[in-house]
Image 1 (cartoon, rainbow, N blue to C red):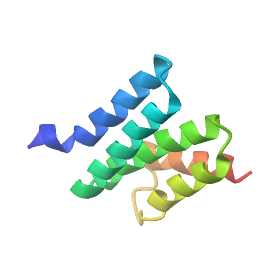
Image 2 (cartoon, rainbow, N blue to C red; image 1 turned 90 degrees about the vertical axis):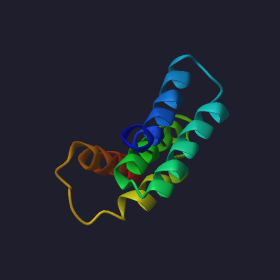
Image 3 (tube, rainbow, N blue to C red; image 1 turned 60 degrees about the vertical axis):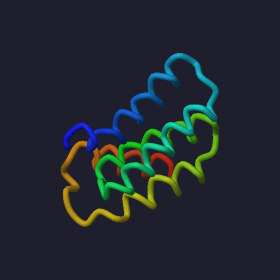
Image 4 (cartoon, helix red, strand yellow; image 1 turned 90 degrees about the horizontal axis):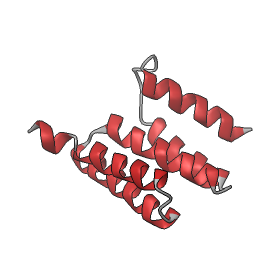
Length: 100
């Protein structure tokens, strides 16, 4: 059903909320990783991309650009179309920023 489809996004948003409240990075990372695993299990690549972007941004904030780039590029490279969508444009811009 529709609620189950959005489970990965809800878990990702829980991570965003916890980050905003100042939760420890490990707790936020766990939310993003769980969201990615749920999305993978559902074969919901767009939701996996959103979770990967959140995790990549967190890694970037922690100074780990390599982990950020690898995390996001592994998901982004799966896509073969839809590059005009907001999520893919944002992912491409973040990858370019991380590659510098």
